[in-house]
Image 1 (cartoon, rainbow, N blue to C red):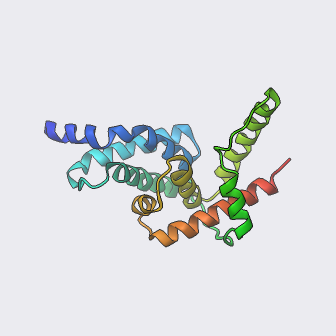
Image 2: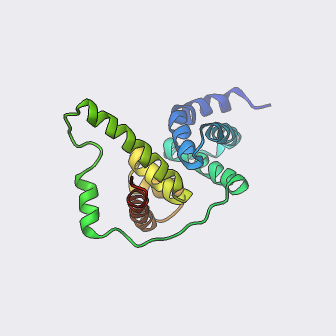
Length: 181
């Protein structure tokens, strides 16, 4: 039987990141129900391995467990192939950085409807990306992790994080352009 100190450590290390864990699992699996299963399995793994936590970065440690659990689940249930594309061109990169999601707008009701439709298109385009690309975009854009933390969560070098993020953004833009109404 596990002693109370394991539970306390788990509560301090993993539980504060539960919402982020679910969001990451949701993006990686493309399913709310599957994400719940992944997070539950990840929580069990985290609890069993809580003594292995090195007290460095609880957020990165927790998200790493969720990521690994999600990939195990994906391999078992939804095998996907990774397809590499060319990096973004400099003008595309500048446009993406200048026209981010935080640009101020005075939205009319028509604008709100258009934004909701666009959000749906982006969601569908993200769902079509291979899991490693979707993961990098989610960690960077939604969880707002820096490159170093993404490298720690994914277990890949920072240079690979940067190139994979570039490729993911390019492929996402291609998906949006190719499937535009």
